[in-house]
Image 1 (cartoon, helix red, strand yellow):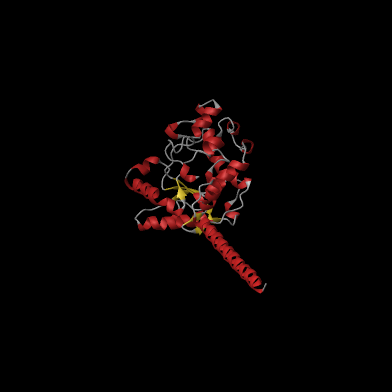
Image 2 (cartoon, rainbow, N blue to C red):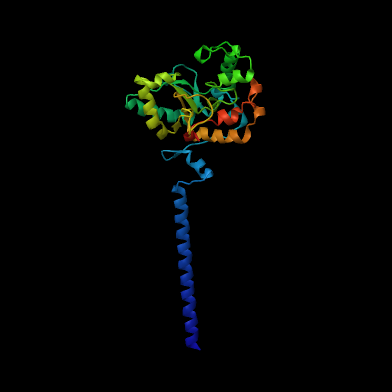
Length: 284
């Protein structure tokens, strides 16, 4: 009887020890799995969304995105999320960018300068009313379009809007509303095709991604079938802009794109589908 009791007691102890070891192994495995998940580059969209907010190992703070932000109904001068761009780095005073995007630009500009390349901001954040002035000046023939085209010479409103949309966004649809996008050095593609401009563009192509910047409007092709003509000067801070783009898809409708001359053409031309979303895949 005593021997059998000792046998049961020994078996019980062995079972408990095995159970403790098993639980410990499960805890170790679980911790290792969670650690692996943190460093794994995932394939699904939700996890990629987190990765796009990491640049050089640093998390990028994101604003609480509202419909007004997406449509450009903002005042960057009185918004703590924006910073005034130093005139040293710009073609004129009074321009703003979102803080994270601005500091990323400063880092990129410093690296470019070390390589003998100068980056100058020509345009940055443009609120709705600013974009409306640009659009309506073109719509009403007050500003000549590319190739000396006058928009008022085009009587059909859809055709007129299409001509303006080659290079200018409708108010409420511009990425410049978001405080993440900038125009650099020149507003002519020809500048970037030779000499100093070509050197600038090659540097941006090689290095801008390291600082979180991408070119939304590359040449049309497999990477980008719709949208504006190529803009070699337009660069976007992807970690924040990609979040604005996703939010735009989710909460903006064609009924929100209004308040300017020619706004009745927005839905018929599918400006959200073809222009807001008509960007290079690298900027998603």
